Image (cartoon, rainbow, N blue to C red; front, side, top):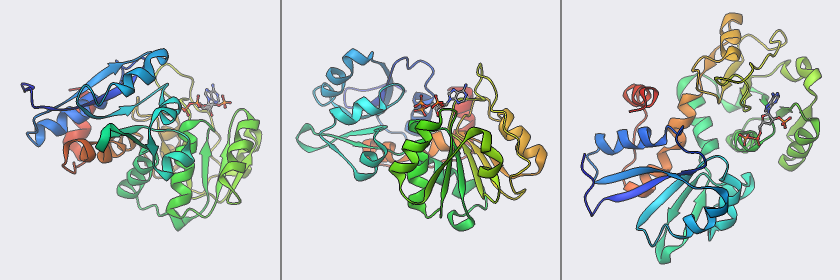
Length: 279
Ligand code: ATR
């Protein structure tokens, strides 16, 4: 579709950004809703992040998504961040508001919980959730799960110190459990989420003995390439329900699209296929 001079423009800021599926995702929605708009990849090195974000209003951008490695640094550049992004300490969505103010939010946790809610019978009240990892993705997942009503979290991370720090920041309902104590973390849990990059194409698998996990516990991976990670394959083989990570990517994109282009978009199988095909 031709982009006219009146097109509403948004994009994704990352470094590198060529791997991002967001242009395919938003491009699909723009086409479906016949919106005169464009969503472009913006490769921005860290030393230019602030200048690039500051230039968005002058360039007429409606806003941007922010991806690796800029999510934490972008928070500091925004003029305003919502309470959730502040607690997570990272921004993945920026809207250019009145008076050219940059307003940051974080929709990663929303994407995670929407993906689970819509693609499984899991409910937050089902019980304790186990988070593997203690980085930015773990933080977004943890805050969203606690906010949605999960009664408690166990954080398991290779570097124990990071798990302890995250658990302390999250409060009384979160506990750090050592990697070697994984069986104790999984016992009685209702949900297991991998937030590390283990299992991604080109990375080693997340090799976790699942014997202690109840068979009705839901297993989710935020990795979506491949769709069925070794963790999800093992969980499926053990008889556990599983949800893949692509839905999180699709759902986290909804609030940004609506804010920039004015239409609430839908996540359906057509979108999944378009994003998987990269078109
Ligand atoms: P993100 O913002 O994507 O979460 P991050 O902050 O770099 O990225 O965090 C990466 C997470 O993956 C961390 O929990 C990291 O564990 P450490 O804190 O011990 O580094 C985890 N991770 C990455 N590679 C790993 C590996 N080979 N084995 C175990 N954990 C790994």
